[in-house]
Each structure stands twice: as C-alpha cells, then as structure tokens.
Image (cartoon, rainbow, N blue to C red; front, side, top):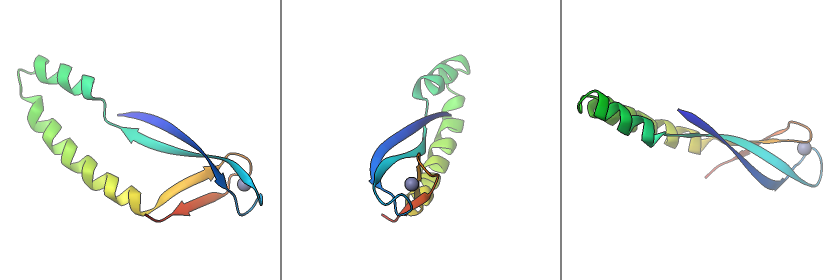
Length: 81
Ligand SMILES: [Zn+2]
C-alpha cells in the first residue's frame, strides 16, 4: 500500500490563524495488483477482492475521524464529515 501525504491550509485553534495542515491518506496501488494478478494467473484477483472490501470498510472508518495535523504546532484537528 502506498501512502500519500495531503496538505491543506486550515484554521488552527492553537495558533490562532491559518496554518498548513497535513494528513496521511492511504492509496491502493492498482499497478501492483494488476501485475500480481497476471503473475498468479488470476488467483490474485480473489485476494484483491478481499483487500478491496477491507479497504472500503477502513476508508469509511477513517472518514468518521478525519484528522489533520498542524505543521506549525502539531495540534490535531478533527473534522467530522
Ligand atoms: Zn497550530
């Protein structure tokens, strides 16, 4: 799994002004799964399917507690969607 870093300008309660906030976002590496599917002659598709469902469940869980970290003071900002 590849991990991507998201950056956004947001208001920090601790700093009292807009600062750069960072968040880790997990990304599925599609190319890796396609390569593995070809190598295992399609057997990996089953594993991929399980991983995909797990990923969807995991995604909805992190969406509930969407946390951004202030790059200035390290204050965690929780955003409920
Ligand atoms: Zn801050």
